[in-house]
Length: 135
Image 1 (tube, rainbow, N blue to C red):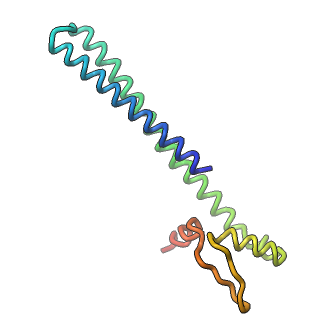
Image 2: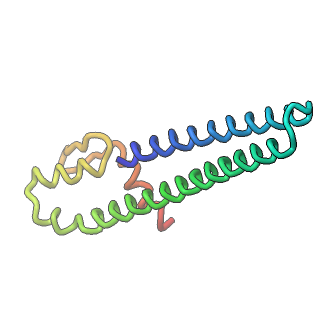
Image 3: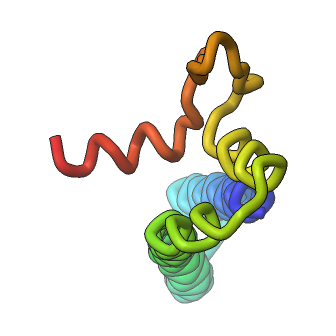
């Protein structure tokens, strides 16, 4: 879900950056026409104001996307931490099969049980990051 949101935000940002580039090109053309006396000062100033307004609007939208992404990350991390924090009680009351399911959701590779020991090839990246918070 967060991946989809990030991809959408990146696409929106890329579209806004392309719009800024097109607007800057338009402004450059207007400037060249003005220098070549093919446009009067009033027309050039009108185009310049409109282009600057469009650029400012696009830049504000890009800033808003960045804030939205940060909020989305914070919400997802807070939810994840809350779930992990509350995992103890369901684990204690779970059957052996349910405990295997809970454990396997914490690790990215298959958890194996061998000689009364648990083997975990690699932990979940999200869980690893949580452990790094205190480091």
